[in-house]
Amino acid sequence: MIHRPIKIYIPLLLDKYAANLRVMKAHLNQGPYRKKIRKTIASIATSHPWGPADVPDQLVAQLNQQLLDSNQIPNLEYGFSFSYSHPVKLTDIHYQTAFKELVVSEYNSALNVEDVSGNYLCVNFMWSRQNYLFFLEQLMKQAGYPTNATVYEESFPLSYHNNEFAHGQQALAELRISL
View 1 (spheres, rainbow, N blue to C red):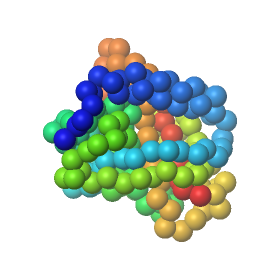
View 2: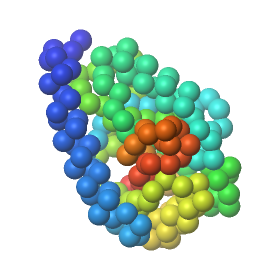
View 3: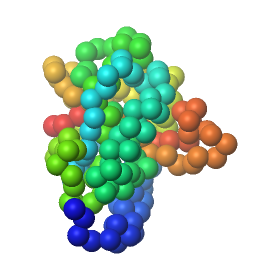
View 4: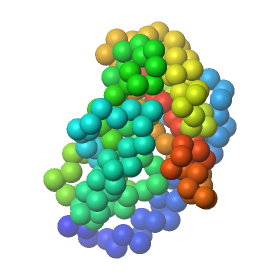
């Protein structure tokens, strides 16, 4: 049960979101960089072989509903994780989980929660299916092509105007791996 009103968390969420966007924009298209992340996420496993070539809105909606059912605020950011295995094309990548950061520190035990805080190697770019593999390759090359690496892909909407976001536009993307 939540002990504080959810409205208390909204300004904190907006401040954190704005600060993260400033860092991402500063590193946009600049190649891999190191970043310390403090984040606890709720995730759900994928039951369909979705990847960056798809629009997994149903999966994100399912995760949002689980968060709402647990008195959480489903923030605008969302992400996916997958195991890196030298993909040649986007359809070679299959998400294993969808995730969102927890906003409220108290949560329902029914959620699959994980603290993913730590040091990461990241690369930021404007979401683009055409450039996705280019930036993934930059990240993995800088990391020395680690075996069994989990890649976290996170998207940050900049606009929902004219349904642009639903068509893969107007979002910053971050690919990262733990160091």
